[in-house]
Image (cartoon, rainbow, N blue to C red; front, side, top):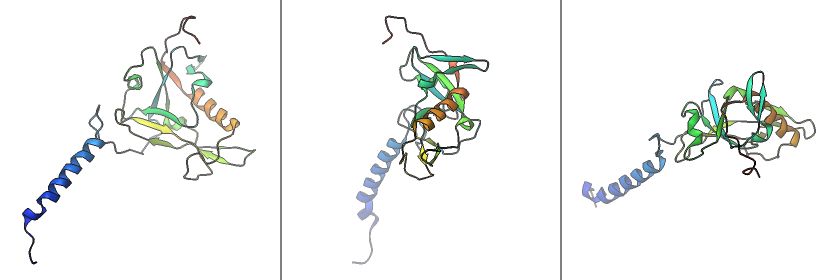
Length: 185
């Protein structure tokens, strides 16, 4: 039995190399060529971008135009990181007429406490790259710092408070097109 010869391992090495290439190809972002390895380091001043549908209501204040309250999603809020994209990237591949709003990572509330349920909710931001969008990220809601996503659904009060905080801090940087009366549903 003694020694092994290198040629005996060649089929195994070839199979390993083939599988490695497949894995690497799966991890490669098509549009950027970046590895889809999440970067969970967010600085408070990093901008986040989200598209806003055509015909969406906006609110004007002395600080600028903001998306309407009902345009702020909850509990999972999908957006793009400014570190890895430009604002216009949220409109790709094909969202003509849509607008864009932005806010900073530091604008996301750290915690909100619900008096009625006695739960504290946190809103961590996760970099969650997807195949054609390396900048894709999501805001989740967790209760009492549990590591399960949303085990106790936030009350309407918490949902509305979160949405209000984001709304007042978010600024529209590209206006959505307005629908004419025949297009409104």
